[in-house]
Figure (cartoon, rainbow over the protein chains, first blue to last red):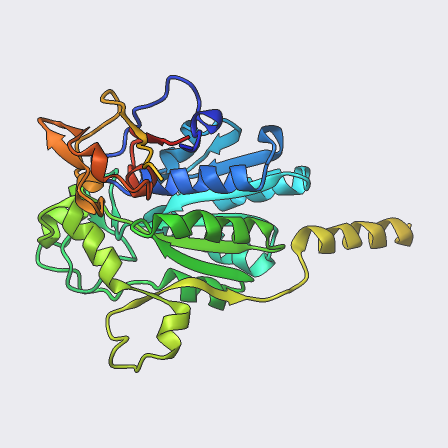
Length: 272
Length: 65
């Protein structure tokens, strides 16, 4: 039977604003399937975003949503979670929102290990503002502000998150749509800060400038570069050149921030 | 056993003509008809749901019993 997405969509909001072939819609479907699998309650689920193409996502989903200042999704979401620890807080955003303008908020949310899930849709560019290069644009690739090629090396969001202290880090792609909801389900179930990076395509501002002739070519690229973690174990370093690992990359158990904060409150009360 | 065919519903109001469903259908059930996707060969459908899964615009529903 066809999956009923309408249950989780605000009526009358479709069609969405994303360009033809943009993977953000595929990620949104994955998120909806994950929320349905976990049987989350709409009044106990908050989807928080900053600014950008990907950050338009909460506008379409029918639950508690926040559309906040650029890059500040993690800050607002921390507030929501501190005030109402029973809420399932899910952050969504793009690579520019999460790792450049909100880079500091992102790493400190990772460090605190607060029980939230951050879905970063990495399309290698600032799509909404006109295709400026982002920290994730690969070296040599073109953007509207780097017409002769980007000299900067790009961020590896997963490694950044692991380094900053996130306790669950996974990566998927918009092409492997079946995997997206499974990764998000695992991320929401994990107690602690979980980061799910989804490699995405931006045919309008990134593909057009980097010789991807169509959406299909961009999707095929995602298909080619993605290597599941288990398959990568059997591959040599040469074979893994230019490939990107997908699946659950890192998982550990560490004290969670809300619980630790509750202990601080207890200590303060006892000291009186 | 007789093969039951699904019903493929394409909501043209939502379709943005990105070609993803047409290109990634393993049995080439769909085609582009002008701007929108449409069903060309329903007989070949194996109900893998890849088109429904990958449509970024919520425009395809594969209804099976």
